[in-house]
Image 1 (tube, one colour):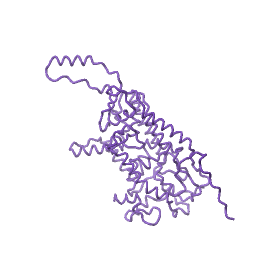
Image 2 (cartoon, rainbow over the protein chains, first blue to last red):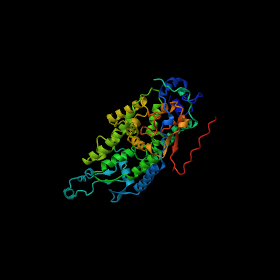
Image 3 (tube, chains in turn yellow, green):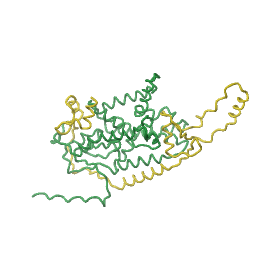
Length: 150
Length: 299
């Protein structure tokens, strides 16, 4: 069935007889039903708009598009990367698709040391107390590889 | 209502129309090789011009709608403008209009294939295409922006275009869920997203390109360029015999007998089979060929 639909679609199942005569016999009736012509009141073609497009609006818009795309490809954003650099726009977009954006509230504090070493525990508590709130609001992890962020 | 045009049933398609009709599925399949190229994952930093989930294991380019929604959610934290995305969409739109929808979009191709299953299709009113702009403004821009102002990152937003998108459910959710089921870990995709996927498949059997016609924000955006894009459809009054073929061929339900370069059009070029609507590129007036003088009428 799928092969038949595919062959019909690409015109390999064509049979002579003109337009809309591609479908094979078993499904022909059903296809004709779906391809019926819409009744249409007669129109006067002479009165219809030719719909010629002017060259310049499209050309100018395309030119602006090329300039924007070029600038975007070389654009350094205001977002930092995890390794201290600044993210390119392309890196930011890549981060969207790999869940590479980090927010300060998502950064977990270091876990407490294992074992019963009181010195290590004290050092950890001191570190946690003295840890300053991050100055960045968002940053890009360029190495992120989460397959589906949502 | 019976068609009042006497030649309606006898009209034959033009050679160009036949060729385009045969060529289109091959071009759509060729573009599948571009969008579903796992070796191109390094291209995720570049947005594509078609509706295609970047979480798909095989995806190459990034989804422009996902990028747009992410930028909107990021705006309260870092005021960034997606120049590359805007530039690419402007370039594609200005040159081809919504041609990418009809000839390059993998999700549109899937709906075309589903539409080939011979079940009688339901005709939708033309106004439903305006819903696309509600989705674009509401779900893609405003909702992520508002939730972003509330301090919720895009990935944590419970309602977002990515969580409701059937392309995401199909291209990313379904492979991951299938893999999970095969590993004996159950079905991880949410029931709501699964329901969306089922509803999408069911609707594609009864409506031609339901997603493109009712919801696709990218199609709506690209269709805005149809009115002035360089590539367009031109009406040739000499080729028109009022046979009704153009309107009957349009799978999107556009009244192409009245106006063809409209926002509901996906530029599939099916309407050009009659010969009265010709695909062409706009050229500067100075270099345009002068119109041939009118032929002398035999007396």
